[in-house]
Image 1 (cartoon, one colour):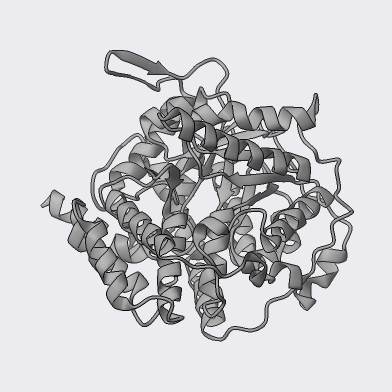
Image 2: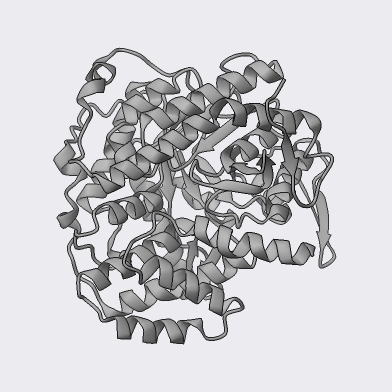
Length: 504
């Protein structure tokens, strides 16, 4: 018997919020809520008491050991093109029909976590796998075709909670909610996940234990679940081997989560000068070191190495569209040449661009797991060589950061988590980079607060949620302290309150 009960606050979809799903959430919460809390406390301790980063002495035996992960499962052998985005009904149909090998249904950075979005997204995925997903828009019918992409769900990170699911009056970890709902419903036969925002191998160990318990509860054979871990924090970059080891009976690969990785670096190294965001490309030396180490580590352990998201998206203007497509082409060709097994795009029109780049290198092979990249030798100094990116900061760069952050927050508060801005697809990660750079540049005296507030006033004009966005941006970018994330505050102070007021 459970010592506490789960309660749903808000709209209750009986096909998604079933007794079986809620029981699984309750049992995961009971078993692991304390460990999650301890790990989040350890994150805070590391931020408050930083120590020099490097590869861990205590796990040297793991890095030097001869072991491999379980590897891919049906539908994951060939991952040369993966498309990502929020699991809205239209996006789900378009993604599954896009020609991509994998559809990353993103409940995290690309989704504004309204309760309607969370439950509706799970329903869309369930309808997709049961053949019920279709709809009509402007007289055109949309339905899933005969050869859809493999669905891989990305639950929210350990740091987030879901206020609509409570245990003894306490919000449950959003990760438990997203994971359990997908596993019980759409992911029952192919329980594949992307794991975001991990900061240590101990956090990977917690996920592995979650997998073990969930499989036991649902009667799923041990080792059926497959996870791909996003390496998107600077601390995780030093623990790639260890993260793979902890998840070895469930792990399919690692992904180079480039935008969150930059966000993690900037907020961790607050005194380090960084240039305009546009100059922080994948070709700067410290980013090259990160991606090459990821490929070498993955292939040594029999795991897929998946490349990151190129932010450029198609536009209606022929000139700018050609430039955007060329940027994506160069990005994907570089990743394919480096040994990645596949990569991400955010728009169906870019699937052929990515596929062509990997087809050229892969030929008839489904992946590059046999390419071990033994020529790569990355040191801690290489990963931490941030000065290699330069330090040129401009006022247009400042304005762009403010514009992106406030427009994204405005859309997020309105229920949209992936937003096309200035020819780029922006999500929570890129908004976090933008506000962190503003905070950092103010602290370094590169701009005055008066200038920042002037630009802020100008960029807020016409926004739907202007006052809420102003409050959030001021707190997250202009305050004395730098919050670890902006979305938990936005969720607690504004989004969940908006939903509560609508229910009254």
